[in-house]
Length: 164
Image (cartoon, rainbow, N blue to C red; front, side):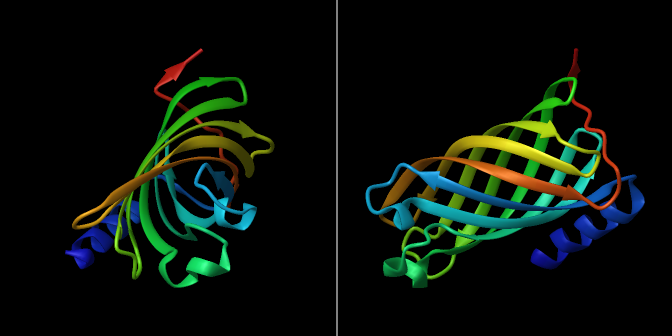
C-alpha cells in the first residue's frame, strides 16, 4: 500500500506543474510539564500545486529527554490555501501519521495558519491547531502554536480558493 501512495505522489509530482519546498516548524503545546516537554519540532518536504500542497514530515512530539524513545513521528500532510489578501494566505492542513514505539501511535492533525510571503521563495506561516493521538485503549489530544519557515526552490506566488 505504501508503494502505491509513493508511486502516486511521484507521478503527480512530475506530471503536474508544481514546486518543491522544505519547511522547518518549531512549536509549543499545552501539555503539562517543562518547556522542553511542551516543545515540538518538525521538518517537512513536499510539492505545491496552485492552491494545494502535499508534504511528508518527520518530527518530535516533545524535546524532553524523558520521552525520547516514543516521540519521533512520520506524517503525511496535505495542505489547502483557502483565502488570500495580498501577501497573506489563510492555510488549512489535515495530517495523518504514526508515532514510533508509542502506545497512542496513530496521529492526526488539524492545523490552521496565516502564511506571509516574505519573498518569492521564503514564506512564514504562523500556525495553531491540534494533534490527536490514538491507540487501542487510550487517546489524547494537545493544542499547539508555532511558526513554520518555508523555502521554495523556485519563485512561488501563492494562490487560494477565494481571492480578494
